[in-house]
Length: 362
Image (cartoon, rainbow, N blue to C red; front, side, top):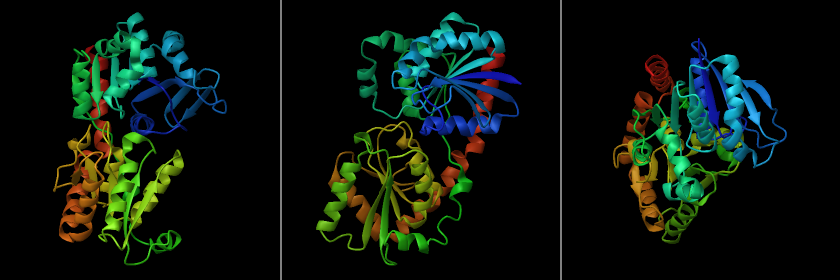
């Protein structure tokens, strides 16, 4: 069995797109690979070591926000000790972030160990550049020292090229556990009653971290325009956000009563929430930013609205509420696309090919 050492800023029970991707991939590859993971501890209640699924987790630090910086600067020292013991076949950095710095320093001292970098970033590139600040030259080394880069969208693949990456770059997106979203739209009457949704009412849903980049404020303004002009008398806006496992579970359940999913993002690495909505049979509305155009074809798999434009948001919601033929077309095409391209079982095979490629050829 090949041994992979993962560098990630955080891991379960802290949850986000990157953490979910690690879990889904490692759970499915546990028969052929062993995985150790180094991350920042961040919270005191989290143990310094535990095993979750197929991953042995080593958390560094005292349990505060400064642990991320400790990981970036000194995580490679702990990794060297593990490598001496386990002789890893490859290292895998999740995002060019704190864990990415640690992986880069490890690679610098262990040049013969293949280095796979996965790009999962969802923040705007301007924000990332501002956050990196004076450490820009070190940051670029994360890309330049990688032996192979996997990006979850074409947008992030192009970013890697702009950052000076010379290695092969492959787009392998995040996926959806399709089984979780099958038949969720049946037996939903009780939930509708709990949410005070009347039989003739339409539900527009967004599932987002309540941060500026996800455009929730613009969505609220756009929905207010619909109400003010009398275009959505039988519609409700359902906003789900804030939380870890609660967010994901609420997301799965509430799709069963929703008619439209919308997130008017200002930036997006890929947009897994859109994919999950499509898998659940909910038509989507998004902005033409980041990785969203990889799966959203306007009028075919979803609708584009303009970012930071409540009027555009209102117009697209109004269109989907009024045009049932279009809505059904988007539902059918969306479910087909997710099943054929964004199923975790398909994506894991692509990741396994990458692991085999770098451990055999580099």
